[in-house]
Length: 266
Image (tube, rainbow, N blue to C red; front, top):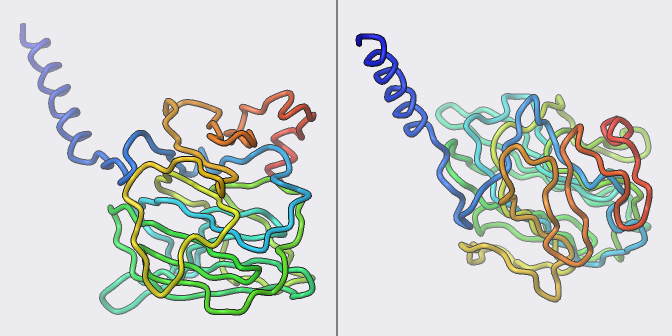
């Protein structure tokens, strides 16, 4: 009889430990995406809007970190190689962890535009982050930020996939880039929405506290409400840019033959 009791005690202690360390749901509710060294990123597996030229763009998400990048590491939150991206750069203050939020967007005839700014990030807390492009880059954290520069035409076209997490390659030869040691994002992501307008005007705005819905300006939206072991995450818009984990590549997407995951993960 002693063995079942021991098993029961161990099970209860395990459950208590799991509950104590459980990640709370984001303000949007529902499930969330976990990224770590094993599940390092997800991507569209095909070119994301390859023929589009965007004058305005907002890419936003909720993120939760149980740890933060250490100097001089940088973590990619999301991005599309050759077009835009948002990253976290680790920095250290005496009594606080200061993360620099870096954003870049490549505009036609404008070269490479990069913005970097320090923001205090708390671990074990959901934070709303936004990359704002009016063909020049801006950023925001928890309703503070904005795009401080003048419009510069259109963001250039790109034949590359859109990625969340991992490392989005940068052209370090022909364009200026954010300097740091690339490392993989480790934490949780929820409610990634991409809009064809600049949704937030700085220096302050009201942080959304609900699940996003598709509207006329939404061009991609992912809720990540699928099962944690899912290999595919549905784009809620009619554009159908679903996201895929490593090892879960489709044969076709939107009537086109997609590249292999190995090529995507270069």
